[in-house]
Length: 203
Image 1 (cartoon, rainbow, N blue to C red):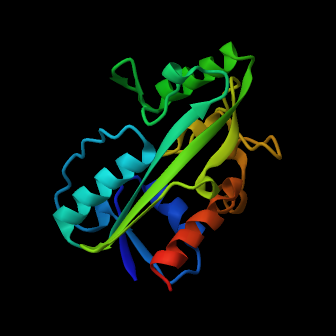
Image 2 (cartoon, one colour):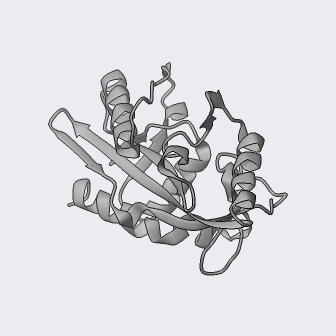
């Protein structure tokens, strides 16, 4: 089955393709469909709300099976008002570029002792047709990791924070981990996403 992934971020598309692996699902991105793409107002207050907003908008525009994902970043040691949440790139009203993101979150880690526990709360909304809408934000698709103030010089387009993100078990930078470890098995979320698609698309 072919599904439209509601993103133009090629790194995210590749990541999802790798996680789903041998499942009978072909994933295409917004850049693959050759149609105008309108900007979506991601005004939700949670990753799940934003995922649903995007999926509904793309389904309305293209009328094909589509799914969208969204993430919120939560950092130990920050109070509720200071948590990035769904505004990972937006700080004080400004949208940060990749280097500004790395600098901003590396400084937060420095202020909190140089290394801090963090979590990506991930969410997905899948629309197969007008009557089949599925949404999920369970812990098995959340990522726990460490943010360090020591910036790795390498960069991953589409995943800037991989340059300051450490795997909790190995202590390795995400940017230095091989594709099998970093993309497919990153914190076990592949199992969660596979389970979601197996229960909704492949029955």
